[in-house]
Length: 316
Image 1: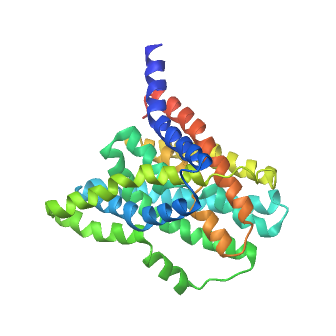
Image 2: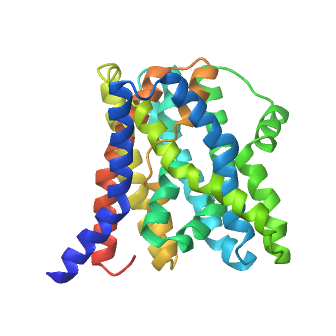
């Protein structure tokens, strides 16, 4: 009984703070203390400054061998690629509107690792979780962007050249932050106190501001549209994908923090960036927003259950 209570307490310690801050964002938006301008500006600040600073500080002050868990990264890439192929096949059979298939596929595989996934890992493992997740986040995020462009281009009949895709990846602030940090980590360079402390100020800003903006941006007014496709996508994203990652991770020999990172990152809700990409490419932005909203709140429950099961089984 005590073990179950300990597992429950650990589960709520991982997801509880995120639920509180997301709910606070929703409430502050409703009473007018936050507005759309704040959300837009806050999201840009997180993406362009705070989150790159967090990743840079985390990786740069860690030994390269600890930051670069290549087995974990390779597993994440292979798992994401295989799930993407299955989803492309399934979308042709489950999604009747051809132009919605890419939106559906992206909503199923693309996790919000940079905000909620990272917050889960930090709450579960502290600095060790941040280190284990940082490089995984950066590399797999590149792959997410590539696959998202492929599926949306196929379903919408648009086209982006390899040069445009490569340019977008090279300009991604998260990638820049990671690339700048890797040689510092590799060489074991100790950052000057002024630079380190300044970077940590921005890094500490990342998760609370990002979660506030995410909560404030949630909009359930459109859920009546595309409800069936939304719920199917949410079920795949929050249940099928993390279960497959955990089971295959166990077969591959992962355990402890590595298995926890796989579950927490794959079980994170659909990335908010998926809405931006769908809207920019002329797709069904309402469907994309619906999937983000449902998975963002649903992830609190499914991740809590996942953490509870793994913790009770002694695997996390």
